[in-house]
Amino acid sequence: MKLITIISICLFFTLFVSTYTRRRVHRRTSAPNTFYDSYTGWNQADGGTGSIYYLDRQNANCSSGAMSYFQLLRSGNNIRYYLSCLKSSAISDSATEKYTGFNATSGKKCVNYLDRHNVVCPNGSVISGFKLERNPSNTSQIRYRYYCKPAQTVCCNSFHSSKQDMGDKSIWYLDRQHIGMNDSKTHAMQQFRLRTSYNPDQMWYDYTMCKLMDLDAVQAVKTVEATLQASTAAAQAAAQELASAKAAKKQLEQQLQNLQSQITQTTQAVEAAQAKSDAANQKVSQDTVNLTAAKASPGLTC
Image 1: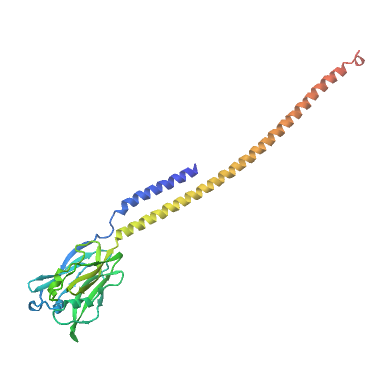
Image 2: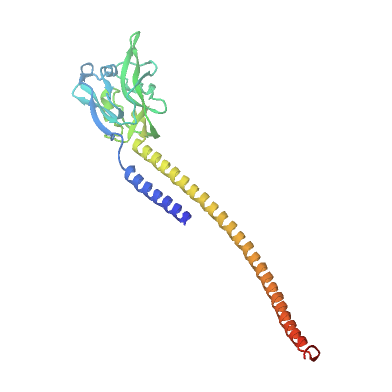
C-alpha cells in the first residue's frame, strides 16, 4: 500500500510539472525580435562623377541592434545608404570598433577597389555599422571603419548577391547590389566584401548571415531539462522504494516459509504426542479393567 501511494505521488508530480512546463514553454520572457529602417543622409557624389571617395560621407549605422541588410540608394547625383536593422535580446549593446587595412585606389572611379576590404566580425559577433574612410596621410588610400557587437548565434552561412555590370566603375553601380536579408527578425550580418570579375566587368557581394539564438527557446530547454531532472529523481526514488519493498516482501516470504516448515514439524510432533497419549490412555483403561477383574477373584471375597 505504501509503494502504491509513493508511485501515485510521483506520477501526479510528473504530470503536474509537464503540464506547467507546456504552459511555460510558449510564454515569452524576453522582448520579441524587431526590425527597423535606418538611413544615412543624402550627400552629393562629387558633382555627379560618382567618385568612390564620396562614400566617406556615409556613416551607415544601426543605433540599436545590428545590420541585417544594406543598399546604396541614388537620387540624381545624391547617394545615401538604406539599412535594415535587427533589434534582439541576443545582441549586446556594446560595440567594438574595427578597421580594414588602408589600401590604394586608382582614382575617383574605382569602385572595384572595394574588393580589397573584407569587413568581418569575429565569431560570436555581428556588424552594427560601417563607414568608408580616407587616409589623411595619403588620400588615395581607403579603408572601412566598422563596429562589431557580441551576439548569441546558432549558426552562420555564406551568401552572394547577384552579379551586376560594373559600368564605368563609379559608385552609381553599387545601387544594384542588395546585401543581406531585408526586414529579417532572425538573422544579422557578420561579414561582407565586394567581389569583382573582368571581361565582362562585373561585381557582387559575398556576405555572411548569422541566425540569432532564440533566448526564450533556450530558457524553455532549461526549464524542460530541470523538469526532466526532477522527474528522473522522482523515478529513481520510486525505483529505490520499489526495490526496498521487493526485498522486504522476499524477506517476509522467507520468514513465512520458515514458519510453515516449523508449523509442519510442530504439527507432526503434536500428532505423535497425541498418538502416544491415546495409546497410554488405552493402556490405563485396559489395566483398570484387569484390576477390577483381579479384585473380583473368589479367593479375595467371602
